[in-house]
Length: 211
Length: 211
Image 1: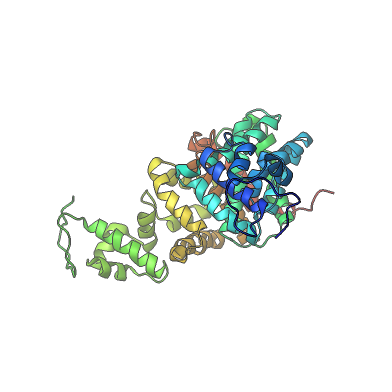
Image 2 (image 1 turned 30 degrees about the vertical axis):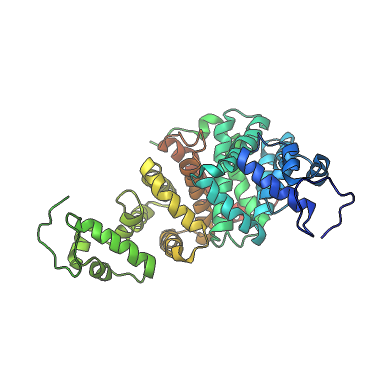
């Protein structure tokens, strides 16, 4: 347990020894689940956690970094990562996203977090709609927006299908030999698929059926 | 409700109006779940349903056809379908499997069935291990066995990742524009990925990282 540099003003009681960071994470999880990503503010999370808003920024920076910290096993700001990769072009974006996804989720810790998230994404449970919203509107939406290609929505949905498929097959189903392949091998085998979806001329991508 | 041509001998009571076909399906579901695909016989299903084994064969043919009828929304024998497609070569096999998967699962009826099956596959619930066994050992195992390519397990696991990814993204997440794309468009966009996984020379497929 870490001692806080300055004790923030609180509304509720804090169980002895509980960490401010944990309090913020718990409050954030509840606020995101109740109001969704867009309608949750750092200020509301601070209020629910009974801490000063400055502490939320101090520990987590941006709201998407906080979202990442709540749901992902590694400290990552998914939207910042996309923005960082995008200027290098679709090939680098595809490769970078795949590598990041594997590094965040393909570990025993990642698997434990991923299972309920993916179960939530594929379930029709409206209580988990905020996860779907973040994934579809925020993450994929940011990729679509940053990608300078025609038919970006279609291309990004195809890319998402392959990346989600790797997560399901490698991380959750643990299907060998893919399950035991190291990340860089997977990046080498799968990136060309993603690059084709993002860059192949539209007419060839949706080409006519073979006669 | 259909009248049976000849009343089979029964052990248990049958609720009035319940169909023999339904009785067999229920018994099969329970037997597969309890004993797995390999250790369940048509005879044991017939015994559990209280019907003559000849009726099981009459209604469902093979054991894998019966498995398909229990879990898939369309009458299909997945193992027979694979065996039927394989002799035409990896390209035709990849395209045929993708087309069959879409036709079976990408419908409102298919979605309803697919959701719990996929949730079961990705959960760690040992009660649903028999679904995983059927998918991994039987379906993918049959593809590996019938495919005349090097590194078939790796290639088939990559193919499975893309097909499962399409199911998750198109059928369950309903991610547009993929969700509303017709099956033949998806077959045209995705088959080249599957063909690359199955046929690209191994050295190129797992190629060296870019320097």
